[in-house]
Image 1 (tube, rainbow, N blue to C red):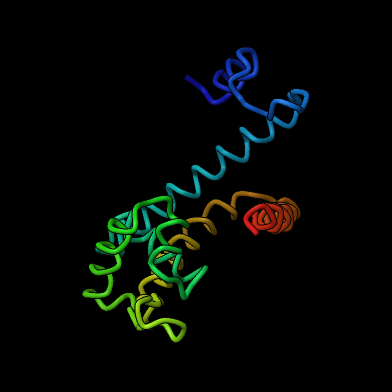
Image 2: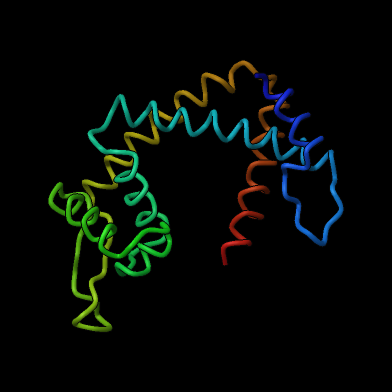
Length: 168
């Protein structure tokens, strides 16, 4: 089934939840489908980069990325950020610590709390994955006219800022 067919079915069935108090905006929902489709292509590029250049599982990559972006974190904060149990997060952190990708240090605030951060080795691993992903993105971007590329990049910066405003 094509994305367009999925879009039409979702719009007709009301499958997209735009909030109980808001009116349905078909143009907004169509735009959301388009952004989702593009984000899935980007996720696929990320997964390809991980598969080709890393021994990390997707879940381990997710932990490493979260700590890199939001860290240093304590274990309960990391678990909450990732929507997993503290014990599951702890096992993942232990594996990544053993691999030399994360540090686990006593927190300066409490001797009972551990502060988790990315090591230099972890940052290099993330940079290799990101570089591979950027190469794939650049290949796709080369197919767009320069004005479209610049508009897309600016719009994505604005979307990122809007999305981050919702997480604060």
